[in-house]
Image (tube, rainbow over all chains, first blue to last red; front, side, top):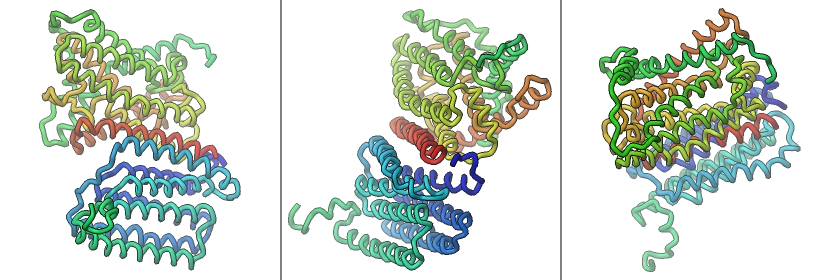
Amino acid sequence: MNLTEMNLFQQAILTASAMVMFMSFLLLSQSRVISTIHTFAAQSVLIVLITGLVAIEERELHLAWSALLTLVLKVIFIPWLLHRIARKFRIQRAADIMYSPALVMLAGGAIAIFCYYIALPIERYIEGITRPIVAISMTTVMLGFLILITRSKAISQVIGFMAIENGLFLAAVSATQGMPMIVEIGVAFDVLVAAIIFGVFFFQMKESFDSFDVDHLNQLSEGDA
Amino acid sequence: MDQQWDLTGWLLALGQTLALMALAPLYAGWIKWVKCHLQNRRAPSIFQPYRGLNKLFHKRPILAENASVIFRMAPYILLGAMLLAASAVPFVTTHLPTTAVVDMIVLVGYFALAKFFLVLAGMDVGTSFGGMGSSREANFSAFAEPAMLLVVFTLAMVASSTNLSIVMQALQETGLVLRPSLAFILAALLMVGLAENGRIPVDNPATHLELTMIHEAMILEYSGRYLAMVEWAAQVKLMLYGVLIVNIFFPFDLAADLTAPALLLALGSVLIKLAFMGAGLAVVETGLAKMRLFRVPTFLILAFMLAFMGMFSHILLEVA
């Protein structure tokens, strides 16, 4: 279907999903802790928007509920929690050192093309306007992995993990009109628990190593170095 | 296009070229005026750039002893390239003989030609500041040009043509369509425009510190009418970027036929859009600080990524 034949709703869904991919690239390029948290929140807002628009467009009530769940959890609660941790440890302005950001961005571009290529056969079996979003959700997942690989601070890694979750959620919305409600609540609960465990984990890390650098976790004990 | 052009078309093309050249200092003055008011300063008259150019044209140019012919040739080539570019960008109508024969890649080529000779002129006299400015300019344009060309290619894919008139007509005909690709390349083009015109996050046009200069460093050795031509060319370039952006992305009122009411309406609307665009530029320049020199490539790579995503989302979302 051509873009010009769609109604404004459908165009808005596609534009928002393109913005989700852009937010992933922004997450990849940013190094300040606070701005990654804000970018993650913005990405989650876009996911909520897409889910809500798909719910209206396809008349699926349970998607509206999962949009609400995402709003509460990923737009409000998790950014607030991470914000609090960042404030507590005074790392708002701390920058995560990343080696050759330009190269990482180009790698992100290559990943996007790769995901488009492998999403093509999947998209053939999907009906409706959310079809092209599958490639974008895969890209979001893969870029989340790239964030995990390239960052060394624990808090940016958590953001990368949450970005992967955003991508999976988008894939569920676009490919199958959302997961069953019970699964969705289960996943949301998992994310919630993960966020809290990460919070505790940060405290432990700070106490043991006085740093958030996950490279310290390679050492087995404090004795060998 | 295999249309036959009559005299009116050619006259209009000449008129548009002269109008763009004549209005460019006014546009620069307008941006400066808005910027001064935003910063709580008393603004100079918006006609001040004309007076400045007039003064410089009446002064005797002073050349360095070892200035070669390139140094004296460069201002003419600069202004000439801008003159050609001004004839190639549709200003109030897309039905012009000059815009029909030139496509976007040629336009990028005009800008590149002007920049090439400016860089040469900066190095010609052999002062350290000129060479420094030239090396920076060459470095940044190596990053900016791929982004610019990706923007051009994306537009060409959207409209199935690299000709600016056809692109604008195609976008005008589809009306209001939310295109993710256009949103991305608009952002990319804005960033490239800031960098190419030496505006604030990349270069400060009003700076007096030689060590931070880029564009100003290259033209430090110019004086008199040469300086006037270089400055005028820079003003025309800024204006052309503005016209390009408003006419590609907001082409609602471009005249479809060459009648006086349609042309006047188009002229009024394009001037209002340009005024808003200039005010927006002044807001950006007031709100942002000049970034560190070594962060500029990252800024331009972000522009490149945006342009890439524009092209990618066009393939992904719009033709699937």
